[in-house]
Length: 145
Image 1: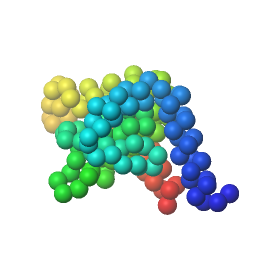
Image 2: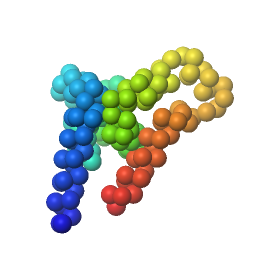
Image 3: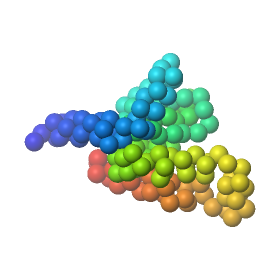
Image 4: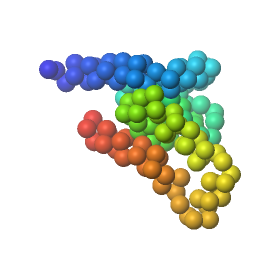
């Protein structure tokens, strides 16, 4: 099979899986995508990415939202990290929101966890659901090279 055909097939499989197995989070992501339709959108390994004027990233199914970087569309590390969350969505399907989405938002936003990380010197990415997103993104990028 030609390389371009294989890549196209993977993109379609990714999209089909997100719209079936990952339906709950993909529907939420689609709604957020529509709400931010005037922001910059681009393709990222089959995911629909949006560079928005918020201070945090979020991944919902096949939709990625990352902060717009001054002078450029988005931060590459955060973009890869959020893509890792889309891969978690493929693995966990309808359980993603409970197993990753909610804990990630709480870990990021609750003052209790912010101060706990600051006191302990722990990175935001030290939480298992965040660390796994980074690992999956790195493995995926390695495969794409």
